[in-house]
Image 1 (tube, rainbow, N blue to C red):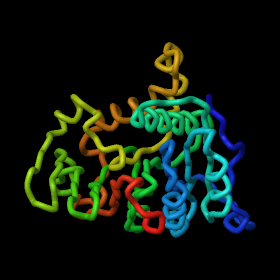
Image 2: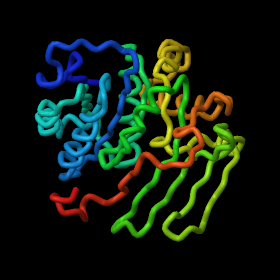
Image 3: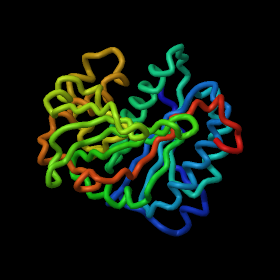
Image 4: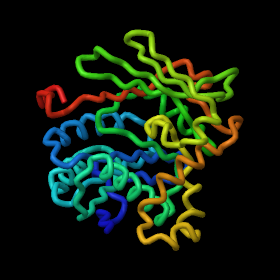
Length: 271
């Protein structure tokens, strides 16, 4: 089921004679979509962004084995430390495949005890690089607003935490392009339905996965790859509001933009 590329892999130009420890490690998980011919371009763009983040950073890219050769070649040419995970399973639901990929990555992190702060990043994400400085300050869970930019930039949806004096008190979602249709949810609402949380807007200490990987919850299920993402979302909503680190501390700034654009409509030079 899980076919990792082997030991921790990085391009020679990045490794050099330096040795990295896990202190301050950021683990970025990126999923891929079957049949997306522009995926290599998007991954290359993200690789350039991640190469500007001070180490240590580990990029985990997950995709179907049938399309992994091109990606593997591209990853070897980056200046980013990475692991490339592949699988043989076939999917008819894009959403189901994405969740499967995220769970595979989390399971890999748990099995290999990769200690760091985990962040889910789509290939089309754009960062304020100061975001990673803040992310490394996370003790257990961190949350931040995410802007999703639609086609032709005509619609921008922002969702994320609501803060009062650096304390997370709820969640909001609004259409910034029209300044209307704002929805607000309390922490209690989020806790009753963890799937309302935007996975691109949370980060967490990977060591929370250690107990799960050895617990009865994974031993009693026939497919252990299904439980990790669900566990993370549930734990994030259970976390005391005083322990949730907001990025930035007053939740006032968007530091991550998600370009939610159908790639089939995008010219490859602009992907």
